[in-house]
Every structure is written in C-alpha cells, then in structure tokens.
Image (cartoon, rainbow, N blue to C red; front, top):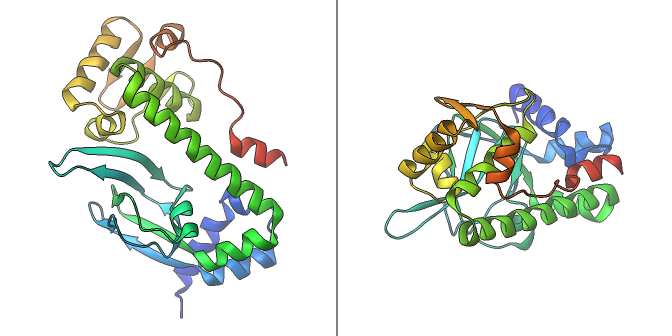
Length: 245
C-alpha cells in the first residue's frame, strides 16, 4: 500500500499541474491512485539514455536536468525541469527509448503518471487532450529555438535571451537568480564556463546588468533587448491559451 505522505505528495503534485486543471475532484482522485512516487538524491541518475520511461514524470520538488553527452564527455543541457514541471510526455506516449539522460540536481521527489493512464485521459478528456497538444507543441518550438541558438546566434545573444526568459518568469521586476550553477547555465547555452563568465563580465562592464554570484539585476532592459537581437514581443504562452479555454 502507498504510504500516507506519498499519497499527499501525489495529490499535491496533480493539484498544481496545469494539464489536469478542471479535471474534477473525483477523476483527479482516480488518477492519483494510478500514480507512484520516485525519489532521487542529488547527483543521482534518474533515467539513462536508451531506457524506457514508465510514464510522464512530474517534479514534485527539486530540480532535474535533461542532457546529452558526447563520447568525449562534453555535455549539452536540453532542459532544466523544476517543481511543478513535467518531462517524458512524448517518449512515453510513443513508446520510444529515451534520447537523453535525466540527472537530479538536488534531492527530488517525482510523481510518475503512467502511460496507460495518460492515454485514457487523452481519449476521454478533450480539455486535457488540448492542453497536452499545446505542451508538446511548445516543446517543438523550444527545440527549434535551441537549434537556432546553437547554429545561428552568438554567445552574447544566447545569454541575453536566456536572461530575458528568466525575467519573464520572475516575480521581482528587474532582478533574477540563475536557477543552477554557472557551469550548468553554460552547458545550457552551449558555451564554456569561462566564456559565460566573460560574457557576464562584459555585460556588467557595459552597464547592462549587475552580477553578484547567481543574482543578476537588469540595469538596462533596452540594451539587453538590443544584445538579444531586438526579439519581437513573445506570443501568448501556450499554457496561457489553455488556461483561457
């Protein structure tokens, strides 16, 4: 039998998941009974490349990284997944083997939503199916952005756009905190740690930002936008569209 703390963790994770909004208490409780909890210590491998996932993973607390690693040890971080976010949807639904590695960056608790349960929800809950479609569409656009950044953007532009994305998700205007170490941020941006440090120092010297360890204050948002390439105003986030439906 599932322990009471695990049951509460599952219910809390599902209750805060945008995908399951408006599912209804009774249906949500039924879904919760199908889920299980997985624990991982900091630095532990959660899933290896080539393995099969039992379902979609919801990070209840902690943070994990999805990454690729070359034969010579070079790493490229694909995503950083934190509390309330998910990973593994496409892989589990398609029944494919994992194309990346999953590592815990902190002690984590993850709720596993089984693939069979996911398919039942897709078949019986139109709003859930629509939200899942938007999530997968969002991931596709993110992948296109990643390819563009890696092949067509300078390091400074990648960093500026990354800082802009952090600004959009923060509750403190003009101030952001790097969610992980600078080593991991560098891997996320596809640059060396030394290059990231040089780029941050240059932006600070130009009066665009101020940096203190992992805390970054945006001093000149207009100039940061210029470094980012004068990107157009982003379209409404898919989850915002889903929430309005």
